[in-house]
Image (cartoon, rainbow, N blue to C red; front, side, top):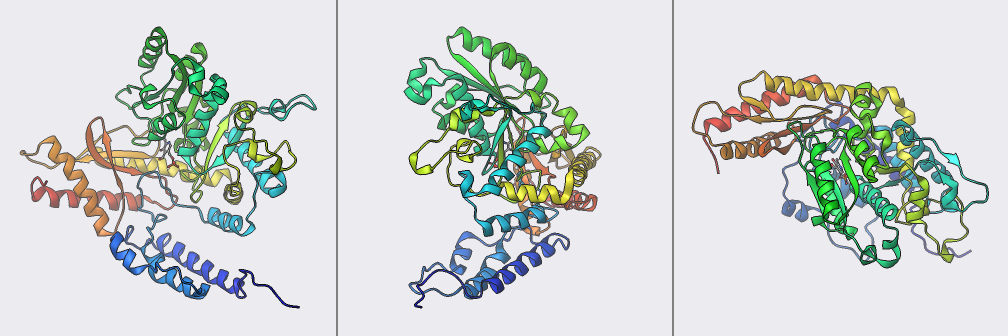
Length: 500
Ligand SMILES: Cc1ncc(COP(=O)(O)O)c(C=O)c1O
């Protein structure tokens, strides 16, 4: 029988083994052995000259391409799982999550509808259920038999998306639909009023970006002042809402931060929930980073009130250590979620009440729930809880080291696992702006040493270094090493005097 050509690879299993060996070796080198450099110094042009860029007419074969990966991609890949990679909120992936991700790619399900991924659909419901329960959202109750899908789904809902930016967009999309359903048919002009949303001046940029995408306009996002602990000033929130109402505008949503991106500040959630309840506003909580703290007693106390949210953004790919990409939006009311995203088209086939196509804006999607399910079941809540607790302690360790040194100034309280501090050269002759620039040079010096990678922070107008300890491999020794290294780099730079 004549065989037609396909894209199958004869030595697929051997190739998979080779790729798996490469991944396992890398995890061993950057994780337990902590090999650097944490960030490779190669420039874009140097890498572009190295990485094959021709799309050949005749294929090179997968072994040759794997050779390329081993030669000019893997060695230059940033060592994100390294114990001293504490930049942004980009966390060390848990190997069990990597396993789940590999299986996810191999199974390649299409759970837009139940038939495209039956087990994948169930997994997403399971993971959303776990997280909804973690945040204390009220349990689901079944709607009346035979009711429309949207009515039947009475209880919390959620969706798994690419990350926190998308998760915030999904939350605010449902908020807009719940308050201004006419926008779906008539467009924003059909609302006839100007919707306004509120977030503290510490809010993540994705809130304003969502407002732009949703047609609400950046000018209608009120940056509510924060207090000296970087938490939303609720009296200022009340005043802003009253002023907007008096001006004939239509306040509809407050976004609270539960772990702000710069300092990890948690807004006063119960007070904000009260304002939302009395003013009839949607309560969205951005817990993209801080949500994992709910695993711990301390975190649950800090985030008390989150169970009153209408929607919550939480990123498994942040402090739950799931490999990129994975964000989640939870909704108090699945009915409101489905009313916003219900997808009907003849080519989608028969509807199943559990179809994921009705839970978010996109259709084709990966089965991201698999890697979360895999990791959460592998480690259990207790192991994750211990890691998250240790991360909080390590951020405090860095803060304490800085507080005890005349050369460092702590810039913000540590509420979760982010610490911000400013190296202050001893002696006169430095302006605050020159000290601001010194922080940038200090971070560059640390990066060049290959020993660690941190990102900067601007806290209440002053620059500093920022450690986001959301890393399951970081130890007390790593924190001490980073502190000692940065102190000695600070001294070196200070000795050179103010730089441009
Ligand atoms: C509080 C907060 N919200 C949203 C985001 C956006 O998440 P992502 O980078 O996954 O889009 C971040 C990212 O750091 C964040 O810290």
